[in-house]
Structure formats: structure tokens, C-alpha cells
Length: 512
Image 1 (spheres, one colour):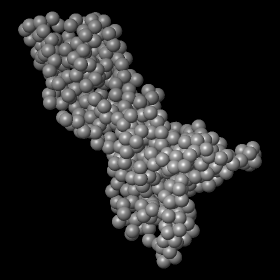
Image 2: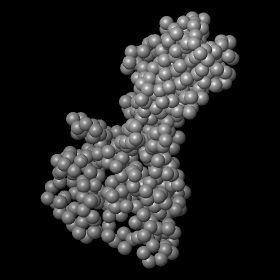
Image 3: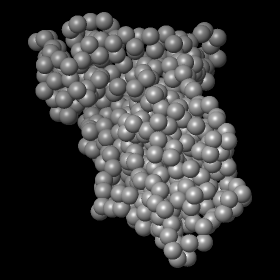
Image 4: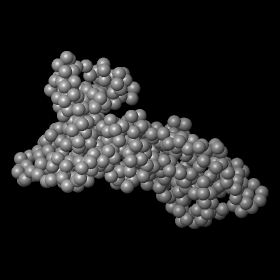
């Protein structure tokens, strides 16, 4: 008897429906075809044990399992449940009539229990798109799949629960999730706050500008000046995720298997802080079975690279294209997958190996040329993609011990949201552009117009401070964001002067 059940394969952040065909006939062998990997082939042993424990029997006939389409490689253990139900239906132990309406996914334990799978959200989205009535999967993944409306999602604990569902012995209720309620429930639940940081008002201002325009930023300063503390609080002043962004980020974490079981939906902007020993593949994604990297896990959020010069040069260079394109394509011989990677890069570094170059009190002990050599670990093309270079100085004792309350993140965030609303209107008709940092060269010329006095100031700054030519567009973008924060339609000389101040590493005098 031939029976078809339906599963799903995840490629990138999207899913493809897989048809599992099971045919039982004369003979005594077990065959699996359709490009299964080792984990899929080993399902035979898990399925047999789980079927026996559930009180049913594994047929002692020729069993042929085909995973269609046969030219796509099938990976992982999530097809166990689909295959087990197919075998039970093909052998006449359960009714096959209801199977065509459901996508079935889950890894089986030897005792018949169901283990979690990856990519439940994209699988649910694809199941709804193709008109399936419902999705059956492990209970631990049910909440994340249930945020897809117009699809019945059933969370099951064991193979026996699934069998009872199809035989009509049990009629469980589908899992219901109020997506909007879930989204707004924890939208502002941050532990850190900018009010924790004493002093550093100029650095807070720089990060406010970065948040308002989506600009990349690098913090340069001695050890203990507060670079990491400030960077960790940047997500608290970014605009809250909107629902499409939350769904997009949830899909990525679902595919990576990193979505907490208690969370149906991501409500906070991601904050990723990988160690400097990270490999190229771990940062941008890939591997034998491609998975999202740190830049994709930081999508719609912040990627913080602490001690930037300590990262391997090859690791930093692979970020150059994703920083421009806001996506990364992983290509293999048989296929390629694309992951979104629109993130704010926040980097920090010491100004030299000893950490005290330009320190107001301590003396730098690095030899001649050492500072320049240390800074040259970061390539010009990568620095070109960082809009704000901010020098962080240590906080003195009087500021540190002050009882004066600092400004809270909520107040800064309100100003950032207002500036972003101005940009939403400005870029409403421009696809793929949502903030000032994403403007192209042509857009900068049209949107960031300056008067004769402003042009004179930039010319003077480039000549006197030794600013590089590549700093020109960056200054205009940052000045436009400063003007947006001030509620100004035009870029004034004050806005330009502040933007020029944030180009420390472009100065020829730096580390000269």
C-alpha cells in the first residue's frame, strides 16, 4: 500500500514542503531514497523502537521510503515522526484519510517522545501558504508555530499522541497565540538603562545619533572607560521592533534553533557580542549544513565587536559586503541560501596595545610606530563603513560619585523614535532604505544639501584636520541625522560641525 505524508525542509529562512512516500510490499528489506543524510537514514532505528513502545508493530515486509523532491538533500532528524506515521498508515494500522491535510514534523526518542526541531516558524508559514489544514509538531515548538494565523497547530508530546489524533481517540485543541498581545507584552523589558552610566554625556549623545540614523559606530578609549557598558545599553534607545521585524528576527532564531521555548515571538532587538576568536563561518554563516551566523542573528539589532583589532583580519573583511548589502548569500555546489543581515555595527577598541595613547593622565608606553601598526589591523574599506568615530575618556571621581540622576533610556528613545519617523516619511517610496545610514551616494547629494557656508566649513575641516575624501559622505549623513533629531528641515553649520567632530580616525594627525 502506498501512503503519502508531508514534512518540510528549511533552506535559509524559508521552508520547502517535502512529500514522504511510503510503499510496503513483498520482501523484507528497508530502503530510503531521495538524498537523505545520515541523520535521516538512522531514523529507521528510532522509528522502530518508538512504534513498538507505542504498542504497534513495525512491518516485516519490504518498506520503501521516498523523500520527494528527490534532488534536494534532506538533513536532520525532524522527519522521524513523518516517516513513522507514513509506515503505520501504509501498513494499515492507522487510517490514512486525514494525513493529506497536515504537515507532520518531529524527532523521535527511542521511547516515542518528541524532541524539538528547528525552523518551526518558517515551516508553519509555508504550510499555511500551501493550503494545509494544520501542522503537527513537538509541544516545545508549538508556541512559535502558533503565531501563524489561519493554521491549526497541534503540539504533541509523543508518537502515541499523534497516533491517537489520527485514529480519533483524542481530539486535542489547537494551540492559540494572540500575536499582538504576545508582541506588546514584553516589548520594553530591558534590564539595562542609560541612567546606569555616570557622566559620558558626549558618548551618550553620539550613541543617540547612531540610533536615530542607524549609523555604525566605533568607540575608542582606554580600558575601563565604559565602552562595553555603553554599547550594551544601545538597544534600549533603539526604536521598538515593529511586528514584521519581530517576525523576521523570530524566523532567523527559529532556523538557528535559538528561540527560547517560552517565547513565541522575539520582542527585543537582538544584541550579539561574539568573542574575538570567532571564525569567518561563525560570523557570516555557512557550514556543511548552512546556518545563520552572528551577523544574521543580529538582524534588526546590534552586533557589538569588542576589541576590534584583536579579531582576525579575514573575519573582519568578510563583513564588508553584508554591511553594504544588508544580506549575506551562502553558496554551495548544489544550492545557495540567503540570510538577512541588516544590523548596526558597534565596535570598541583601545587606541594602542597598552591602551593609554591620548590618555589625559597615564602615559603610553608603546614604541614609535606601534600605535599606527595597531590601528592598521582595521582596513580602510571597513572603517569607511563606520560613520561615527567616538573617543571615550575615563570618568573622573566627581562624576562617578555624583548622586545626580542621569537621563533614562526611555527619554532618549522618544527622541530617536521622532527622528526615525521623519526618515520613514522621507524614504517611504524608496525600497530597502529605512534610515539615513542606508542612503546611496546619489541620495546623499539630493537629500543632504548644504549651503555655501556649510561647504566652506567642510572644505576647511578636510584641509586643516586632514580628513580623508571618504569622510565627506559620512559627515553629510550624520549631519542629516543630527538635523532630524533637532527637528530641522535643513542642515545647518552647527549640525555639520558636530558631524565633523565624529571623524577621529580620519584625521591624519591620529596616531601620527
